[in-house]
Each structure stands twice: as structure tokens, then as C-alpha cells.
Image (tube, rainbow, N blue to C red; front, top):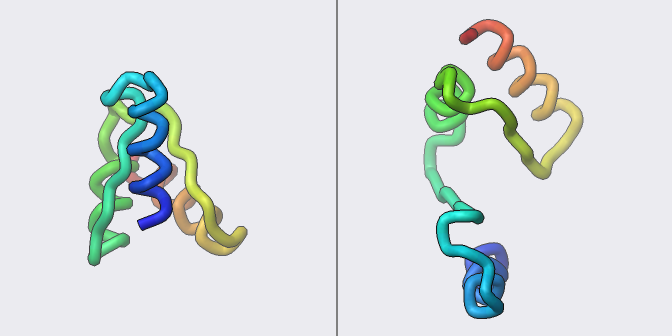
Length: 64
């Protein structure tokens, strides 16, 4: 909820609504696979452990 509130504050401060997106999910692997296999996605930023970063990097390499 903190992230959603922070985005709301940013929009209230004048940040364009389509500049920041927050996506919530209950199925992270399915979401990650869909996003990382989409050729339109050029960059991904995440907050997490090194282990998760390695999984995402491997996923990106195997889906492209």
C-alpha cells in the first residue's frame, strides 16, 4: 500500500499519470514471464534479492 500511496502523491505533485505504473499480482512468475518475454519491454527495474535478480535475468535470456 505504501507504493500505491507514493504514486498517488507523485501524481498529486504533477507527475504525469502514465509515467509511473504499479502492478500488483498474486502470481509473480506468470507476470514476470509475460513481461520479460514481450519484445517491447526494454528495461525492468525491481527491488529484491540478488537471487531473484538472477532468476529474472535468466528468464529474460531464455524468453528472447
